[in-house]
Length: 313
Image (cartoon, rainbow, N blue to C red; front, side, top):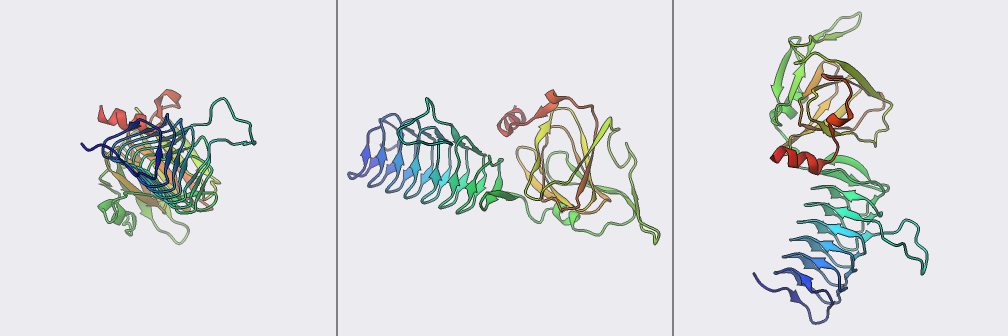
């Protein structure tokens, strides 16, 4: 390990700086800031006191990291990103404690983005250049625009069998295929075209691998909204977009895939311990979900870090 390299034109007052870190000219670091190992802080940055920066972080030129910022490992912060820590700032008036803003491990924030206080940019997420982030960004989401909205998810395995199947023309015979994420399966249900109107049908315990105890429907979703963002400990779900289309992201803590449900004869089975997200709803979309269990709030896992920890254990 090598000691930190601090440029002689930097004003670094903190002693909590990890090995291998480089701090360039005209950077100011206040005494109580904590900076990890192998961090690169480029010129003309300001690091306040109540700040924690993890290992292998890159902070490009012209960034101010204010009290309340918690930056995880392997984070990239682009040039002139603006962090904030007070929703109602007044000159010479300071709250007892500033809001905590978290940038989780592996996230990237593009140049010129603005991050409002008290939010979380989730693990592996990407915030586009110039975005104005007014709500927390889920893990691995891609958020762009002002206000920022989710347009996709990173690290989807393009060209996988599941992606190819989701674009296929289905025959009239039911079939299913693994998507490469845990035990998740994509199903094509029986389709009967008829000049009087088409019909699709599925049989529980045959095509749909459980007997449901409840159902719910999701509709009238604004196209910018994201639903789901949770896993279940015990409950199975089967999703059908009976009208319109929506995209489903499935994640087992190791692999991730995005499936387009754009026909009522296509369904997806989400077993327990799979993180599910639904977004890209068309204006007319109606998502029908069958669940194997009655509603139980304790069955939900809504924190992605908790979910990945349970998967590892």
